[in-house]
Image (cartoon, rainbow, N blue to C red; front, side, top):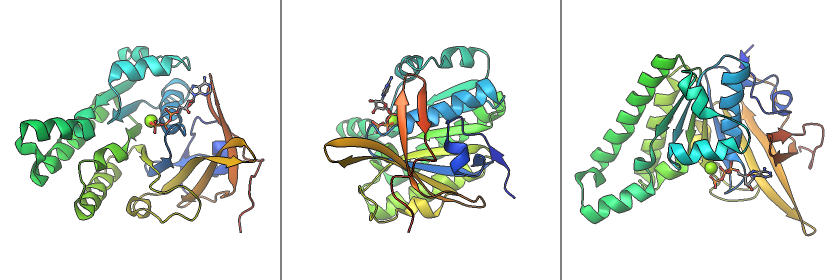
Length: 252
Ligand SMILES: Nc1ncnc2c1ncn2[C@@H]1O[C@H](COP(=O)(O)OP(=O)(O)OP(=O)(O)O)[C@@H](O)[C@H]1O
Ligand SMILES: [Mg+2]
């Protein structure tokens, strides 16, 4: 029996047999605006506020200031949590696409593969240090997609993804990694990183008869008995909520 940790998302624990597998990596896949950052942030905030599990957000997308102000819309005061030593924010936006464009312009040495790999390694070191400092049990990396813009060559990209996920597996924290769907629809090909992680949750918006429905599916969760039905979820000022009893399609 795998130990689980409460996800902090109403309805989700029920779908995955009690919670995320403790100390494992879960991939959160979804299109733009699906709520990946929100789901991951709710996991962190509920963790530190309701389950005494401190957390760290590694953002490749947003600055700390912007992130904290966005999260206040849901009443989640991450600045206060940081002041209390319960939360850490690592700004890794320099690893993202914007950073490479800048690098290209000034032709910095870091545009070589070795340079890129080094910056990923130093990110992991920085993360380990912060985990020790605040005794973090939960980590989020948002989003792997931004890192991948650095590696246009598919082989380099795969190596970087494998290395990073392996490094994250060694942390001992329960870790959510968000990424973008490469292809929409249920027939899409599996991505490399899906084979490396313990669980995969897919979030998407379905269009039908002029209406849209947000839908979530647990594709896999090793060691836990899961409900793989496609179920609806909503987003409001309190965050994200999943409705496990309302299946949109039945599993084959
Ligand atoms: N108070 C609210 N009520 C309803 N919907 C909201 C509210 N606040 C935010 N949203 C919606 O939540 C979503 C924000 O989700 P989030 O930023 O987590 O998405 P994401 O998957 O991380 O997107 P991206 O790929 O752009 O990073 C948006 O679709 C936004 O419209
Ligand atoms: Mg996001």
